Length: 99
Image (cartoon, rainbow, N blue to C red; front, side):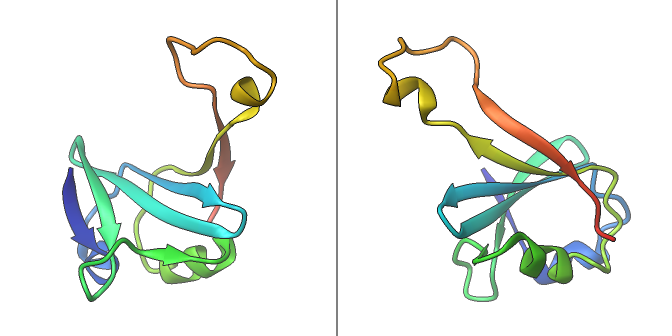
């Protein structure tokens, strides 16, 4: 997967989609779609960009031109109740706004 720095996102003319991925109880990372390409967002040390709240991420994205923004949580409930593996994702996608 391609990488892009969080600081470079403001320089992009149009970011088609930004997904804030819930990866733990209070830990989030970001994935962006730019010109049809998927990017993992990294920090200035080239490490995955992570924050402890969605609001912190939204603050860092406030100068960006984003067409679609969403919080995405991959549910573990199927596994917890003994359901078989799914062929499709059971991710929960919640549309967000930067405002």
